[in-house]
Each structure stands twice: as structure tokens, then as C-alpha cells.
Amino acid sequence: MAEETIFSKIIRKEIPADVVYQDDLVTAFRDINPRAPSHILIIPNKLIPTVNDIEAEDEVALGRMFTVARKLAADEGIAEDGYRLIMNCNNHGGQEVYHIHMHLVGGRPLGPMLIG
Ligand code: AMP
Image (cartoon, rainbow, N blue to C red; front, side):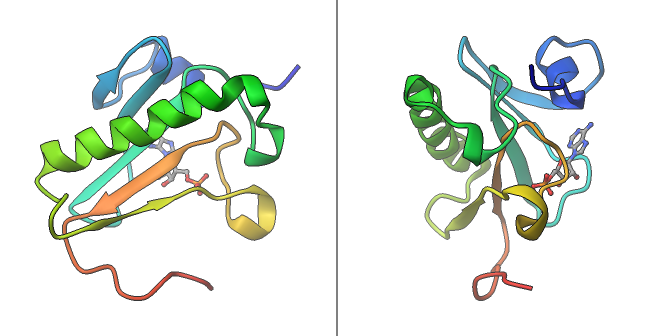
């Protein structure tokens, strides 16, 4: 069994977070340490530790993460200017919280792709 992270507590509303969207499959909340004017994390409600742990049965939730990203980008007013979606995996990917999450980042020019 994978170990729960702080994100499971956010999904269950056991700790405070700035939740901007929630449904039966995904939850989205503002990153506590925003790197841009808009920085939202979109996560599946099911605990999946890393991208390496994704199963075929998770495809619906992963698809929902993208439709919610699209909606939230529009809500944030950043859809036309553009934004970046990021998922980090394991140590070399810089993953800190082992419950997969999509970073939706925008609101300023982000520059070239971040590597290193
Ligand atoms: P990653 O490096 O991809 O694992 O990103 C983890 C992200 O989670 C970081 O951007 C953190 O700022 C963010 N984070 C950690 N704890 C919280 C929290 N309690 N509420 C909101 N964001 C958080």
C-alpha cells in the first residue's frame, strides 16, 4: 500500500488549502509556494504515488486532470496568453510529494522549457 501524503488530507478537507475545484475524480488547489501569478496543483483523488504507478484504469482520472486544467486556465484568464503543465517524477524529476500532481503555471512569460 502506498503511503498517504499531505495531499490526501487536502482532498478530505482535513487540513486547509485554497481548493479551486473538486469533483469525484480530481481536486485542484493553489500551490502553497507559487512560482508564478497562477500556480495550481491538479491531483487525482486516488492516491497514485508517481507517474510510474499509473494503471490503465486511471486513464479517466488522468483525462479529467487535463479538462480541469483547461477550465482553470480559462478561469484564471491565462488561456490565451498561455501556460505550462508540469508533472515531475521521482528524484531526478524533482518530485517532492509522492501523490501525482499536475502543476498549472502561468500569468507571466515562463521562458524556455525548464531543465536544470
Ligand atoms: P513537486 O516538486 O512536483 O513534488 O511539487 C510539490 C509541490 O507541492 C510544490 O510546488 C509545493 O510548493 C507544493 N505543496 C507542498 N505542500 C503543499 C500544501 N500543503 N498546499 C499546497 N501546495 C503544497
